[in-house]
Length: 293
Ligand code: NAD
Image 1: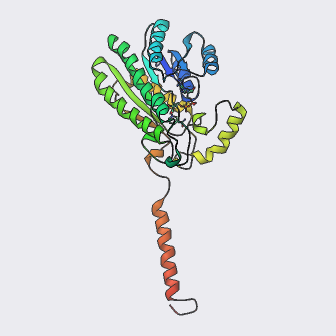
Image 2: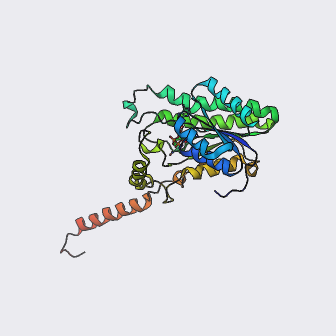
Image 3: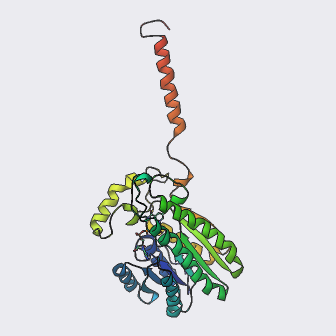
């Protein structure tokens, strides 16, 4: 991202900011002149990122699934940097992967809903209370195309992300009169730890090799034949947070390489092929080889 000063003097909180989409957004906020609190459970990665960014970033250990910690997080940002302009509610988990719903033990459904959805509600309210007092602010929540394009597996995750979308729209309507804009970003498949079916802790070299292996599989359903990157999502978040988006609220911005535009499977061509094969076999039944047609 080229530095344009889009967020000059602004203060952001990024939950799940130590890795993946969150870490890319932290970098982009600072690049655009902002300061940021990185909130995460991954202390080592979060602290290392904050140290790399110097005075513009601070790390805070936060479990977004614990309501009181979200209130403390907003207070920390205001005490540290003086205000809060952007709340990016981004931390999330998929829950355990099972092939079919009938195999799901349901044990982690509550946890997925608490970390992915309840945390967004808590974070939004804590941030909005501060923003409403000064009459401006931006909230961005990370949804997913998993909410728009339902399919196999992780139903609790899909439900949590669908919940984020309606929650976002609902509070955007409510908070408009306080000058607070609320939008969601819905990423498609982005090669992060979460999306790669791996346990955190894989060495960077092994992680990179795994991505190369997974890339063709990731692109099967995607019209644009290049993998999405965390920075693609960060770009959208920075845009939404900036004054360039000053008339946008209550929207879901999909960044997915075209996946939700429609299936890349050309069903019409497949049906035509099937029809032609059928008609050809009919014709040869009626006129076996050697007989005049
Ligand atoms: P990631 O695993 O790289 O990063 C997620 C971060 O959230 C990690 O740093 C993790 O430590 C943190 N986190 C998890 N639980 C937490 C908690 N209870 N408290 C605080 N921090 C916590 O994954 P990512 O792909 O960057 O995911 C970021 C967001 O994007 C998630 O909400 C995810 O659902 C969403 N998303 C990702 C994709 C994708 O393909 N990667 C697609 C759609 C949506």
